[in-house]
Image (cartoon, rainbow, N blue to C red; front, side, top):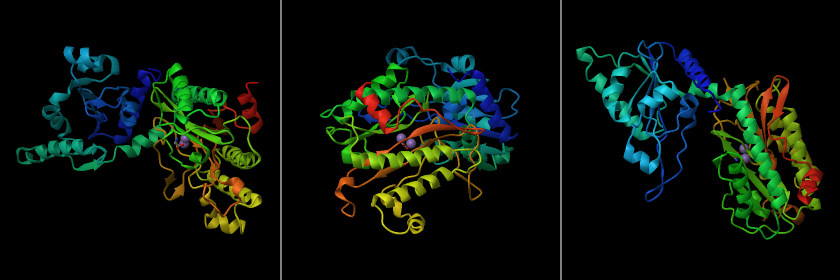
Length: 438
Ligand code: GLY
Ligand code: MN
Ligand code: MN
């Protein structure tokens, strides 16, 4: 575990400090999912569960009870089972969860109906995220109702349900030194994969064959999975924002847009680069590319604790709108185009998102109706783009079907930000040099 046991314990303590006495937090592990018939998707714990426990087995429930004399941290988990372990692999069992994951107490998951109502009883507030897992919601209501049924014998049901996510997600938004170290490593692996792909790409290659370069590079360096399905779009496929089909041929003269990042010990990286399949940008490709790049540099410059969340996006909007006017793709008045979002035909997404255990990580973007101020320890992406639809006959033919995005991962520092993904080139001359292999 690169995030050490003390850090997991600190997170639980911090959360319990916020919850206060007389409360209980209940967090089930994510369910497993069937891919087809009896084949399951590889299991990935939910990020909230992982953040608080570091435990990656399914069929578990974490319970926190601040101030409880017999132990504040209780886990329900699968029991050891020789046959199941021969078929599917090692299980920690309750004893392992106590010894290796610092639970104060642990019980078999099969005993939860008997034990959990007794733990809930007498606690005023239940911290739980309703609506994430319908089956678990139903069971929890059953346990609470079983307490309500016994009020005449003196049972005390909880009076309040509170969203667990609210506080937990604010904690997750601020990355610790150990988390930033892991994210730096994930970013570095992904950067290496983009460099490798720039050197491997050839006209005639299939998009998924280029994707394979990434997967191999990620796994070679200790990542078990991409953080999200890789987007490898040649030519006009680069204009499809969530293109993951990746099964067309890469053509001489086209750009390829690759949005791919590895997950390392559950932490995501998220990089996009757009480069020419034959190693050399054409004039119109270069003009649009350099416009996106200028806006990205300005947005990174604006990622600073003096600014709120939306300032980098506003920079991008201004630079792209002016650039599109200069190149003749937009016509009209600058202020009006910004005001009416006239640029959205070519730039229809936001400039970034929080990044962490989830690629689109948790945390509020607005606080009390204001854009949130950037603060040291927040990690985010900076990813402007331009996408000219292949059938857009309002623009000159030379621009049609060009899709460009440039995406880096950054962490806010006290005097600006650190670009975690700096190892992969993005200036035109640098990309062309890397692609030539010199
Ligand atoms: N890869 C998803 C995103 O860039 O937001
Ligand atoms: Mn991305
Ligand atoms: Mn992104």
